Image (tube, helix red, strand yellow):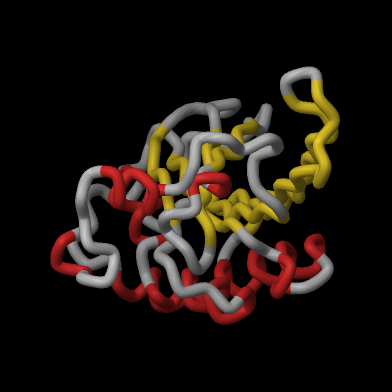
Length: 200
C-alpha cells in the first residue's frame, strides 16, 4: 500500500550569531517532513496496527532519510539526529508512534548517517499549525551535551484532522558557544567510575 503523501517540506536553519556573538562554526539544523493521510483515521479503534506499519513506515523512512542526506550533503556530515510525529485530532498518538517507533522507519536513518545512539523523539496530537518539535542528540555520543538540540517549527495547514506529520531532524554542529560541559564531567564529579558501566 503506497503511503498517501499530501506534501513534503524541507526546513533548513543556519544560526550564525548566538547571544550577540558570532558562531565560530554556524549551527545548521535540517528537518525533512511528510504530511500523510492517517491510514487509521475514521476506522474506529483498530486493534492491529502492524499491516500499515509494515507498509508505510519503510516508505517514510527511506523518503525522509534521502531528503536529510541530500540537504546535508552527506550522511557523514550529520552529527545530531531525532524524529517526531504529530497526529491530527481524529487520530491517536499511538498512530504517530506506530510509524516512527519501528526499526522499519528508523534504521534507514541510522544506517545512512552511521549512528549508534537511539533517535530522540516526540509524539503529540494537535491541530493544523501545532508546534512540531524534533529533539536531537549526538548520533554516537549520548553524553555530548552540545548536541542536545530541539528544532521547532509549524505547518500552517497541517496536520489536518485525518493526517499525520512525520519528521526527521538533523544537525550539522552543536549549539554555538556550548559551555555547560558534557555528561561525563558530572558523572566524574559525582564519583562514578566511567570505566565501569554499572556505576553510571
